[in-house]
Image 1 (spheres, one colour):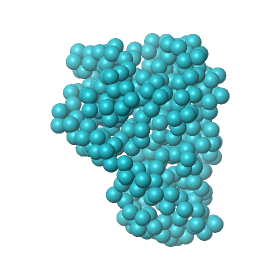
Image 2: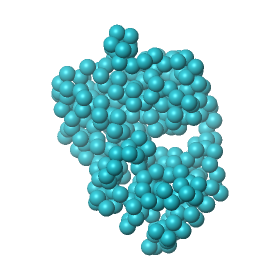
Image 3: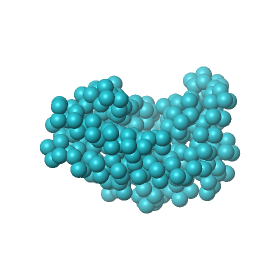
Length: 326
């Protein structure tokens, strides 16, 4: 627990209580249940991970959805109007799982200030599953109450964890495990492997520099594709994580493009991996104001630190041929 707390909450590890889990979905669902929200309201967005939205809907609170700006992030004026004395929780993403939009430190601090001013008893939950192990988590700077880590996102074979300031919620979660058998016990080997993966990532800062260069290279090459098939980048690099580039392909069904790229050896996605079988237009793009047709055209490209510039160039070359042959 000390190692994971020091890695993810380096400014204040003593405030961090760790609860181990099997998966990120288990972590989110379990901690919302352990919070025992019995009334009031929860402020979130329609761009949250499906596991988060499902967990919040199972609570006994009114769900209020903040408006989303064109950059894919929460509109602060909208959030200010939604938060009040009955707000029990504000739950938002750090990095959005489909489009890669990112709430930066300044925005997160403004959200925290709004909570402190208008709902002093409310807590701040940041879904960091896409960012933990890749970005710095502003545990202390934004006074976060809950963050998450998933082993699959950092190269470990499994495992997950909740980090919370609340001893009471940790105790409640323990009851869910040992008294109510609503979640299983995590194998120590899984925990140790996940913690080691997180420590290595934060110890090798060149990972981020390499991935950032891949991201910028891909954006540049996509922007140079012929006009009729030029992808439209969804989030600007200053407002997005380095590990994801998302674009729309107006006039094309991205699910078909994904299969064609797969045949050529490139694995990309038409949306968030966890919602790949949901069907219908992208809920994230719809929340951002895209039409139904354009919400079917989203393409998500994610990176590993093992990817190369040559692979990025080859992907764009194949994508161009696929779109011309569509």
